[in-house]
Length: 193
Ligand code: GLN
Image 1 (cartoon, rainbow, N blue to C red):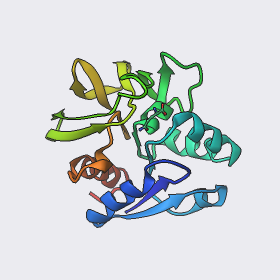
Image 2 (cartoon, protein in one colour):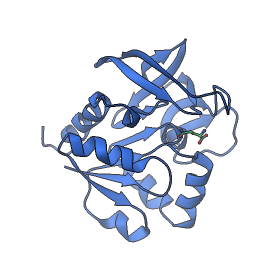
Image 3 (cartoon, rainbow, N blue to C red):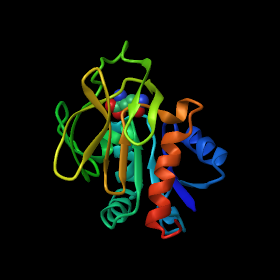
Image 4 (tube, rainbow, N blue to C red):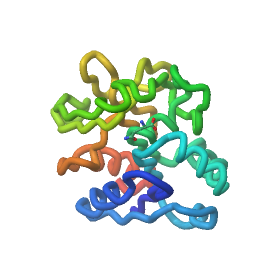
C-alpha cells in the first residue's frame, strides 16, 4: 500500500509520520506529474483551505485529483482537507472537490481562540484524542454520508464510502487509530484485505 499525501501546504509531514509508524509507505503529491505515480489513496492535510484550493488550481492538480476521488480512490481529509471535500460551506461561497454530502462551517470555533483538545467517541474505534486548530465542524450530513463523531453537539468526523473527513487533527496526537481506520478502507479498496 502506498498513500499519496497532498504536500502543497499545511500539516502533511505529520501524516507521513503516522503512516510510517503503521509500516505504510507514503508519497508526496506536489506537482502534476506526481499524479500519474502509483498510489492507492489520497490524504488532504490540514492547513488553509483557501490557499490549498488556489494552489490545486494553479498547479493543475485539481481536475486529475477530483477524477480519482470520483472514481472511488479513498481520500482522507483533515480540517482544511475536510472543507475541500464538502459539497457545501455555510459561510463561504467557494467549494473545492465537493464530493462529500455534508455542509460544513469554516473557522466554526472562532479564528483565534478556536484551538482546543478533547477526547470523544469515534464510531467503530472508541474514545480517541482530538486536537482542533481553527477547525471547521460539520453542520449536517445527508445522502450517503454518515457522522462518525460528535463534540458538543457538532459533527466532527464523517464517512461516505471511501471518503473520510475529520475536523480535528488525528496526526497531531500519538493515537494511530484513525489512520489505521483509513488504512483498512484503503486495503479493502485495493483488494488486499
Ligand atoms: N481554518 C482553516 C481553513 O479554513 C483550517 C484550519 C486547519 O486546517 N487546521 O482552511
